[in-house]
Length: 510
Picture 1: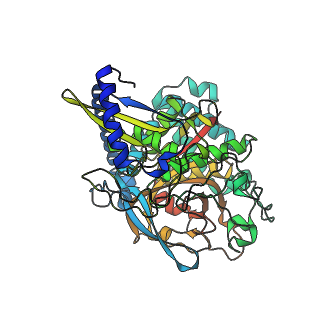
Picture 2 (picture 1 turned 180 degrees about the vertical axis):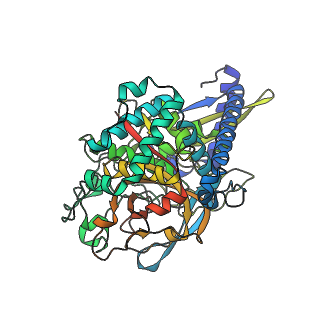
Picture 3 (picture 1 turned 135 degrees about the vertical axis):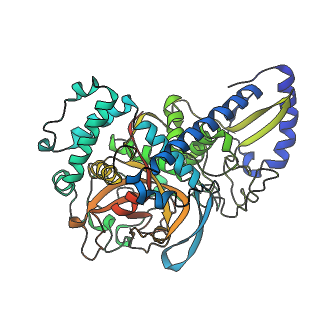
């Protein structure tokens, strides 16, 4: 993506110096080495065209799926009036002690793109083969009878593959309670104390000024007395790094992806790490979501496609500490920047752009070239996502079948990156952490979290409210430890059945 030429380089150098004075903050004066790339006029135009065409395709797939009669209840939640909101949505969130703080949700448009991408993935034969192999391996033996072997499944045509997936999904849904109980290794024994005594001990830890992100975690007595984290041992209970705080920026996808990799490293026997959500988010914005780079938010699937396709390595936090931008103002559309983004931040680099690295635009002939500068990434440290997959969505499965499959993954200890439409029962959750579905509390915004487990109603701690259906998904959120149960939230099966967009999981990292 390097655009060279002596005249362009000279012009970029001149304009870059002027731009640095206007947009680059004292935080950028760090001695950290910088790197970057230049996007030439032709490549910029092609990239924009390709991404807009991709997004339109995913939006069409999502809308077509939601308009199917069997999905009418889900459509009422995700696309109630056929109007698509493209703006980020500010929300006031209730924290411990009754305080409220502003956070930012991704747009409804991004949620629908997530759904459309999942619809396309549901017909990707390579992905379906991997999903079938993994899902079948997690089921108790007696529920596998009559299903084709993995080898035979690989030789089927797509319509037959979909038919088998539907049959498998129906079997799981019809026997969900028994299956979850049989494969569950959840226990009501008191969990171990937190295995990370101090968040600063995580590899890569760094904090930069009052607005720099400081990971945190509660001591065991601080969790809710009726909460799952304090009372239930589940496979990923002690595979969690410290809780992060995205502040006033729409970076939940960057946080969810980084959390998924951190958990995957612990599952594989590694040590606790703190990965850079800022570097991850910036990379997604500039390469997977460039045409919408000046606004908040990321689409999950297209970002994972870029990360895996380019073997992008998620960096450690000390490469680029996340900036919460707690004093950030509204988008100045004349400059495409957010005022006061860098207040009280002393980290490696900051600008007012949503992606917070430097951008210099230069007219070249009839087009525009863009030069980007950001902290230099390591080519050996950190982790790359080798591959990921997506749970088949309700393009040919019912929403209940999708959630039943997700429940099997979650109770089996497979972390899931999921996105969903927000509701007031989520933003207003109390410190017990339990969120139930309600038809009257929809918010036209999208959020992403990392699902780290599932607990059936029959396994809930004494005093916990039973879910309307089946049980609760355990989610690691990115709004700090003051939210819900020390940063963890228990989202009901019904909530995600009616509001979930997509479910992804990482197969391997290196």
